[in-house]
Every structure is written in C-alpha cells, then in structure tokens.
Image (tube, one colour):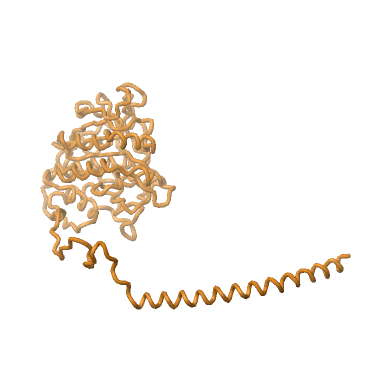
Length: 391
C-alpha cells in the first residue's frame, strides 16, 4: 500500500454536534487519537463495522442495541455465556464503538477465546483440507450483508503456515466491493521481521500498536506491511460478563483504527478502500525519520483523517492495460524445445577458468603425494628424537 499526498480542505462545515457518550471508559487513547475533535465532525452514523472475532456479548451496556449477530463459523459447540465465547470479541466491539458511538456492529464468530490471536498450524491445515476457512467465510458474509468496514483483531505469527489462499481471495473480494479491511499487525514484537495474517494480505490495512508517549509497544510486530498505528496498551474494554478490563495488544489498536474509519465513512460514504488507506497514511502523526517497519506511517490522527475524508485524493487503483509487446512463448523468442545460445564470452571465460582449476588440482595432488612421504619420514624421526629426549 502506498501513501498519496492529501490536501487537507481548508473550509469544512464546523457545526459542532454533541458527541454521544461512549459507554466504555475512554483513557489516554482518546487524547492520542484526538477523539473529542473527531467526534464533533462525525460519530459513525449509518456505518456498519463487521467485527470478525470470538463473538460479541450484545447485551453489554456499552453495546446494547448496536449489535447484529451473524453466523458462527467457528462451530465448536460453544455458546454465548461460555467462558471462551465472546471475551475477546466483546472487547473489540466496544473499542470500535468507543471511537464511533453511532456505528453499528455486525458480529461474525470466526475464532474462539482459547487462541485469541494465534491459529495453530494443525487448525489451519484442517481448514485447508476441508476448504472451510471460517475467516474467509466471515469476510464474504460481512461483504454480502452490508458491512462498510471489516475489523479483524486476530492473526497468526507463523509466516510459513498461516497464509491461506481462501482468505486472500476473500480480502480481494471485499476490497473490490468497496469494503475497507483492517487487521492487527500481530504481537510478535520479539521476533525479527515476524509476520501475521490476515494483516499481511494485499489490500488489508495493518495496524501496529503504540504505548503512551507514541512509541511502539514492545509486543507490536515489526514488519514492512505495517501501515498505521493506534494505541494498544492499557485500553479499557468491555468484557463478556458485563464489566470492563484493561487490554493490551495490536487487537485494540486495530479496533480503534476501525472506529476511525467508521467516522471517515460517515463523513464521506463514497470513500474507496484505497482512499481510506491513503487518507489515514497522509494524516498520521508521522514519526521522526518517516515511515518504518515499526509503526508504519505513524499513529492515526482521527480529526485530521475525518476532515481529509471529505475531499480525498483520486483513487488510482484498478486494472491497467498492458502496453508492451505480446509474447506467446518465451520473452526472448526462443522456442520451448531449444535452449537459448550461450554467450561466447562467458563460455570462453568458463573454459579458461576450468582449465586453470584443473592445473591447480593436478599440481596440488602431486605436491600432496610428495609431501606425504616427507612428512612420514620426518614424523618417524621426530618421534625417535622426542622419545630420546623424554627418556
């Protein structure tokens, strides 16, 4: 994903709308994101955010009347009320609404709380064999049922086992249909250049986590796919038992970022995913030294992003016609049944090098044979002298 310079509009409607009070307590993340000013411009009205997670406890005071419950693609027999049902998902839904209090949540259950952010290799292999990936199904369902934004605070930190073609195709389907997809960057901060999917798929906005002060949270995955960052330490979130607790991770960072995107869509429903990405990147609190694998292009500035959403850069994404020469076989015109001619200069150089090498090989063998005889005789003499000396 690439950032595009965004000209911030100078004259926007500044009629203040009293922000709806978020039921979930707002801590330092509110100041870091600039939520008070952003919510005067937009509160996410008319926007649906699909939270693909472990389920959402819809009767929580912070969520009541704002959640539509979709299918349970995890299908592990757990139900609402079980300890491993809805703990993580409820927290993430509340973090979305903390930012965009008038948005709607579409809950689609695709993981359980036992794993939270890690999918095992065995589990993924079973999905592949069955062609029954719950995350891919969840993305497709969300697109087909009116989601404007998809928030996935989940992933795997195993680069070699977690990429899934069905998930990648589902993300592409979402983006083609105008749905912005976000995912947590991962919590493998102690792994050099670790990777997490779905954050690593093309078209997904990967969200890293900051701590208070703006620096990277030590658990936040460092990777070149990171796009933006949001607060991810000590974020007060709803629980599946009706209360609240502090949560750390790139999970709440992703949910908060998804809330900001909901504010942007409410301001301009015609935004495309590419425009959302470019506006977020162009309006961040850019870290010293510019973008990096630590926090992408920096911490989100919610107020600036919402203002810029009213007049986004032109979306230049899409298929482009190939204007080069057409080739039905190999690019150099060589028939498939015939090798291309070897460059004579390289061939001669190789021949000379091989000849020199052969001479050195023969000479070395002769020297070794002659030397072996001398060393043997000398060794015998030395032992005799040593024996004499030691005796």
